[in-house]
Every structure is written in C-alpha cells, then in structure tokens.
Image 1 (tube, rainbow, N blue to C red):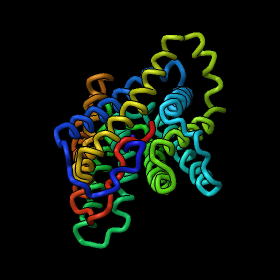
Image 2: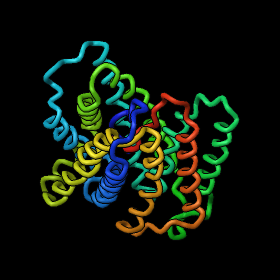
Image 3: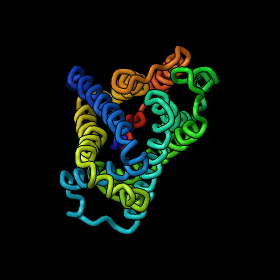
Image 4: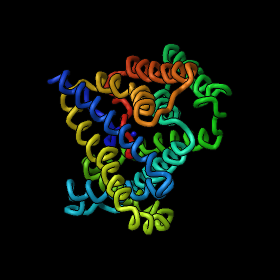
Length: 306
C-alpha cells in the first residue's frame, strides 16, 4: 500500500505535525484493516475475485470523486497511464495471492522490500550500502524455516507472490512518478485504478454469481474498497500538506509493524519472535533510508493501491 500518490514532492515546512501524524496513522490502520477484511472474503470470492471486486469498486468511487474524464490525456500520457494501471493490477493480484498464503504482517513486510530497494538503488555512500545487510537480515528472519505461523511451514509460493508484489510496487512508484508529472495525482490514481480493474476483469468473472448469492459479502467488499483505497488515499493527501517529507517517510516506514499488529488483533495471526525481529529490521531499514536521503528526494509512497 504507499499511498496512491507518489509521495510528498517538496521539502516544505510542516504546518500541523500532530494532525499530520494522526492522519498518516489513520491511513495506515485503515489500509491494513481493509486488508484483514479482504482476507476474510477469500473463502467466498477467492483472492483474485476479491481483488477484482475491490479494484472495480475503488475505481468507481475514485472516478466519482475525481471525475478524470473531464480532460482527456494526450497519447503519451495515456501510454504511461496504461503502464501505471498494469503495475497496479499486477501489484494487487500478487499481494492478494501472497496474503492468501502468508500472515498480513509478513506479506506487507516482504512487499515493502520493493520500494525500499528502489529508494536505495542509486546508493553510492557507505552508510547507504550498510542498509542492505539489514534488509537481507530482515528477510532471513521473516522467511527462515521455523519462523512459521503457529508452527506451520512457510509457504514458498506465498513468498514468491510477495516478492512479485514488491517488484510490482517498485514499478508502480516509477510509473506513478512519471504520470504525476503530467497530470495531477488524483486523476492519475483514478485512471490507473480503472486500467487495473479492467486488467483483472477476466479473472473475476467467476465471482459474479458468488457476489449475487452472497450480498453481505459483496457489501463487505465495498467496505474493503473504501478502507483500502478511497479513505487512506484521502488521509495521506491531507497528511502530505501538514508534514515535512522526511517526517512523512519515517511515519509510513512503520507500515509493516502496523500490519503485523492488525493481523494479530483481527485475524489472530501470531508471528514467531524471529518474524517480529525481521519486521523490525525492515522498519529500521526504511527509517534509515529516509534519514540519509539526499535533499530534494521524496520518500516512497506508503500505501499502494490495494
């Protein structure tokens, strides 16, 4: 999740730090609660059906809020939007497929490696390179044999999907940054969501009868879409206006820890001590990446479109 927007663009002064902190935390909690409820829908719709419904509902909600059709993008921008939407679709599908096999906190932490590695890809200073062992150590602690959920072996396919989601998130950031330089972030997000929804449509067609026969589950899918897209997107955009980019980046680095706590409270996913240590390593790596970031660079978004 890395929000829908590419992140704060400037080094402007913070105007309301306390309000910004509450908005960022509220966005992270909303996003991870949405992920927890989405996981509860998997027995009814399956992970691909759930992500398809969520993307379509989110696209409709964001479309109503932003009305992106008011100004048609030029051909070059449209091509970028198609790539951006494809990244959203792949990222979401991979994330939900991983979430079906792994705890929420582990899935988010593995996916977080994508933007974290991207932010350090141009590392030239020794202190930047020092973060890579911490990232690798965090992954080892998360994924080592024996660090499984309630004694079950770790699902390697779930890990593979998580790494695919990480790559999708990195692609989403790159594509989203390019699109946002041509049109505003709100329109870009709405159009990208629509493209992502179209992409997953063939894989969700089988879920439509289930949605019709389980109206309460379909209503929950609407709730998930609001929690995982419209609400955190809005809260994040408001937070960006109140916080210094570095403050924003540090706060959103806590997302894997928030996911693990939400997974424990709502889904009863008890992680092994090694996994908590791995999540801590990922969080500290992200905070370190923000702290040593060169001036003028914005932190990676914290709430991807999931």
